[in-house]
Image (cartoon, rainbow, N blue to C red; front, side):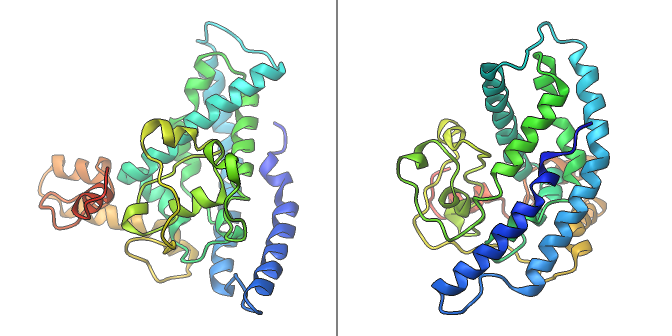
Length: 290
């Protein structure tokens, strides 16, 4: 299989992070936008993700190839078919990302990406060590409708690389592009722990999906980055697995199999007695539209 585009992009990621740090320091009178321990944690998470993902790429390719055998039609590689594939991949990513916020076991895999209280390009590299496994659940429909498995993996990589540049505070609004593209402004909202920003703006490349499916929120108030309950650690292992551990503790303490299953499948924050709140419940209590 070809070398992943995300691996090829690593040198560019490093150059852009250095440039961002310098520009941020200039804007803030010498105050860096990066903090050593936080950045080191993000980089460690990124290395772990890439290492695991390289191994899982083969599994993903095998799954896509098996599913493609049932496709009634086979798309080629013309420019319009690539455009259609990128669009379909972005739609799959939207639902993958949305459900990663709305289903607890998927959130357990995704939560570490939101665990930094800073927002810079290194945050884009704070990727999960377990999403390479959960992602298998989402892109197989592309193979079923006739897209080539290798092209699907390439489209996923393009979608991933696109999202690197939106993790910055240096870029403000982008005028008319804000209506169509996922931009730094839109994605800052997604990383906010402000109640009005919880579970908003799931887009990968096109913010159109959020506007269409009712999950869009514009950037108004200053963004408070991080989790509703921050974990206060820079240990990559704890960052990677803290929510898995918390979920399993809740499941063990559940009084029934039904409740244990709910802890697995209900949104983060769900509890049988309402003692903890989901993002939807927090928004409702604050009088914010769902």
